[in-house]
Image (cartoon, rainbow, N blue to C red; front, side, top):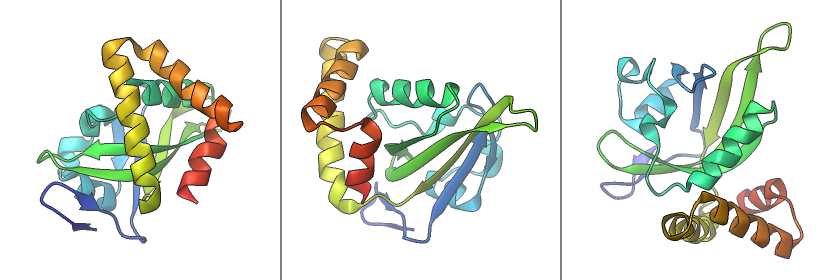
Length: 167
Protein backbone atom coordinates (compact mmCIF):
# COMPACT_ATOMS: atom_id res chain seq x y z
CA UNK A 1 0.00 0.00 0.00
CA UNK A 2 1.29 3.44 -0.81
CA UNK A 3 0.02 6.93 -1.40
CA UNK A 4 0.34 8.03 -5.02
CA UNK A 5 -0.76 11.50 -3.99
CA UNK A 6 -1.77 12.96 -0.66
CA UNK A 7 -5.36 11.76 -0.97
CA UNK A 8 -5.14 8.49 -2.89
CA UNK A 9 -4.08 5.24 -1.25
CA UNK A 10 -3.07 2.61 -3.82
CA UNK A 11 -3.26 -1.01 -2.78
CA UNK A 12 -0.53 -3.44 -3.75
CA UNK A 13 -1.25 -6.71 -5.54
CA UNK A 14 -0.73 -8.51 -2.21
CA UNK A 15 -3.21 -6.43 -0.19
CA UNK A 16 -6.46 -8.12 0.75
CA UNK A 17 -8.78 -5.99 2.86
CA UNK A 18 -11.10 -8.18 4.93
CA UNK A 19 -14.03 -7.19 7.08
CA UNK A 20 -17.05 -8.80 8.66
CA UNK A 21 -20.26 -7.13 9.73
CA UNK A 22 -23.42 -8.10 11.54
CA UNK A 23 -26.72 -8.13 9.67
CA UNK A 24 -27.15 -4.38 10.22
CA UNK A 25 -23.76 -3.62 8.63
CA UNK A 26 -21.85 -2.89 11.86
CA UNK A 27 -18.21 -3.96 11.71
CA UNK A 28 -17.35 -6.99 13.83
CA UNK A 29 -13.91 -7.72 12.34
CA UNK A 30 -11.30 -5.89 10.25
CA UNK A 31 -7.91 -7.21 9.23
CA UNK A 32 -4.79 -5.05 9.48
CA UNK A 33 -4.80 -4.27 5.74
CA UNK A 34 -8.31 -2.82 6.01
CA UNK A 35 -7.38 -0.83 9.11
CA UNK A 36 -4.25 0.55 7.44
CA UNK A 37 -6.02 1.51 4.18
CA UNK A 38 -8.90 3.20 6.00
CA UNK A 39 -6.59 5.04 8.38
CA UNK A 40 -8.59 4.27 11.49
CA UNK A 41 -7.60 2.29 14.56
CA UNK A 42 -9.32 -1.04 15.14
CA UNK A 43 -11.21 0.43 18.11
CA UNK A 44 -12.51 3.25 15.90
CA UNK A 45 -13.94 0.70 13.46
CA UNK A 46 -15.32 -2.24 15.45
CA UNK A 47 -18.99 -1.72 16.26
CA UNK A 48 -19.34 1.15 13.78
CA UNK A 49 -21.42 0.99 10.59
CA UNK A 50 -19.33 -0.20 7.64
CA UNK A 51 -20.42 2.95 5.84
CA UNK A 52 -17.88 4.83 7.99
CA UNK A 53 -15.68 4.35 4.89
CA UNK A 54 -18.37 5.14 2.31
CA UNK A 55 -17.12 7.74 -0.13
CA UNK A 56 -19.61 10.33 -1.43
CA UNK A 57 -18.52 9.48 -4.99
CA UNK A 58 -20.30 6.12 -4.68
CA UNK A 59 -23.73 5.92 -6.33
CA UNK A 60 -26.57 4.89 -4.02
CA UNK A 61 -27.83 2.58 -6.77
CA UNK A 62 -24.66 0.48 -6.56
CA UNK A 63 -25.08 0.04 -2.79
CA UNK A 64 -28.75 -0.82 -3.29
CA UNK A 65 -27.73 -3.49 -5.78
CA UNK A 66 -25.11 -4.77 -3.31
CA UNK A 67 -27.54 -4.93 -0.38
CA UNK A 68 -30.33 -6.49 -2.47
CA UNK A 69 -27.92 -9.17 -3.63
CA UNK A 70 -26.38 -10.09 -0.28
CA UNK A 71 -29.64 -9.91 1.66
CA UNK A 72 -31.04 -12.51 -0.72
CA UNK A 73 -28.06 -14.76 0.06
CA UNK A 74 -26.13 -14.13 -3.16
CA UNK A 75 -22.60 -12.85 -3.50
CA UNK A 76 -21.64 -9.76 -5.42
CA UNK A 77 -18.50 -8.28 -6.90
CA UNK A 78 -18.33 -4.51 -7.19
CA UNK A 79 -15.92 -1.64 -7.65
CA UNK A 80 -16.03 0.53 -4.54
CA UNK A 81 -14.41 3.85 -3.75
CA UNK A 82 -13.88 4.12 0.00
CA UNK A 83 -12.86 7.15 1.99
CA UNK A 84 -10.10 7.24 4.56
CA UNK A 85 -10.24 8.83 7.97
CA UNK A 86 -8.20 11.80 6.74
CA UNK A 87 -10.50 12.45 3.77
CA UNK A 88 -8.48 10.52 1.21
CA UNK A 89 -9.74 7.55 -0.77
CA UNK A 90 -8.90 4.13 -2.13
CA UNK A 91 -10.50 1.99 -4.80
CA UNK A 92 -11.18 -1.70 -4.26
CA UNK A 93 -12.62 -4.61 -6.16
CA UNK A 94 -14.91 -6.08 -3.52
CA UNK A 95 -16.46 -9.50 -3.11
CA UNK A 96 -19.26 -9.51 -0.55
CA UNK A 97 -21.01 -12.64 0.68
CA UNK A 98 -23.45 -13.59 3.39
CA UNK A 99 -22.06 -15.38 6.45
CA UNK A 100 -24.27 -18.14 7.79
CA UNK A 101 -24.40 -20.28 10.89
CA UNK A 102 -24.37 -24.09 10.83
CA UNK A 103 -28.09 -24.19 10.06
CA UNK A 104 -27.71 -21.84 7.08
CA UNK A 105 -29.22 -18.80 8.81
CA UNK A 106 -27.66 -15.46 7.83
CA UNK A 107 -25.59 -14.00 10.68
CA UNK A 108 -23.65 -11.28 8.91
CA UNK A 109 -21.64 -10.34 5.86
CA UNK A 110 -18.07 -10.98 4.81
CA UNK A 111 -16.11 -8.86 2.38
CA UNK A 112 -12.73 -9.35 0.77
CA UNK A 113 -11.39 -6.48 -1.25
CA UNK A 114 -8.34 -6.24 -3.46
CA UNK A 115 -6.61 -3.86 -5.81
CA UNK A 116 -8.65 -2.74 -8.78
CA UNK A 117 -7.51 -3.21 -12.33
CA UNK A 118 -6.20 0.31 -13.02
CA UNK A 119 -7.43 0.02 -16.63
CA UNK A 120 -11.01 -0.30 -15.35
CA UNK A 121 -10.95 2.85 -13.23
CA UNK A 122 -11.68 5.39 -15.96
CA UNK A 123 -14.70 3.39 -17.11
CA UNK A 124 -15.97 2.95 -13.53
CA UNK A 125 -15.35 6.57 -12.56
CA UNK A 126 -17.26 7.77 -15.64
CA UNK A 127 -20.14 5.36 -14.97
CA UNK A 128 -20.37 6.24 -11.27
CA UNK A 129 -20.24 9.95 -12.04
CA UNK A 130 -23.16 9.54 -14.46
CA UNK A 131 -25.13 7.46 -11.93
CA UNK A 132 -24.60 10.06 -9.21
CA UNK A 133 -25.66 12.84 -11.56
CA UNK A 134 -28.86 10.96 -12.38
CA UNK A 135 -29.50 10.37 -8.66
CA UNK A 136 -29.07 14.09 -7.91
CA UNK A 137 -31.18 15.31 -10.84
CA UNK A 138 -33.82 12.56 -10.79
CA UNK A 139 -33.67 9.72 -8.28
CA UNK A 140 -32.07 6.38 -7.47
CA UNK A 141 -34.63 4.45 -9.53
CA UNK A 142 -33.63 6.42 -12.64
CA UNK A 143 -29.99 5.63 -11.87
CA UNK A 144 -30.79 1.91 -11.63
CA UNK A 145 -32.67 2.07 -14.93
CA UNK A 146 -29.70 3.77 -16.60
CA UNK A 147 -27.32 1.04 -15.37
CA UNK A 148 -29.71 -1.68 -16.54
CA UNK A 149 -30.03 0.01 -19.94
CA UNK A 150 -26.25 -0.01 -20.36
CA UNK A 151 -26.12 -3.70 -19.47
CA UNK A 152 -28.97 -4.52 -21.86
CA UNK A 153 -27.22 -2.65 -24.68
CA UNK A 154 -24.04 -4.63 -24.00
CA UNK A 155 -26.06 -7.84 -23.79
CA UNK A 156 -24.44 -8.87 -20.51
CA UNK A 157 -25.31 -9.16 -16.85
CA UNK A 158 -23.95 -6.89 -14.14
CA UNK A 159 -21.68 -9.70 -12.97
CA UNK A 160 -20.29 -10.29 -16.45
CA UNK A 161 -19.67 -6.58 -16.93
CA UNK A 162 -17.85 -6.11 -13.64
CA UNK A 163 -15.81 -9.26 -14.14
CA UNK A 164 -14.81 -8.18 -17.67
CA UNK A 165 -13.53 -4.85 -16.34
CA UNK A 166 -11.50 -6.39 -13.55
CA UNK A 167 -10.07 -8.99 -15.93
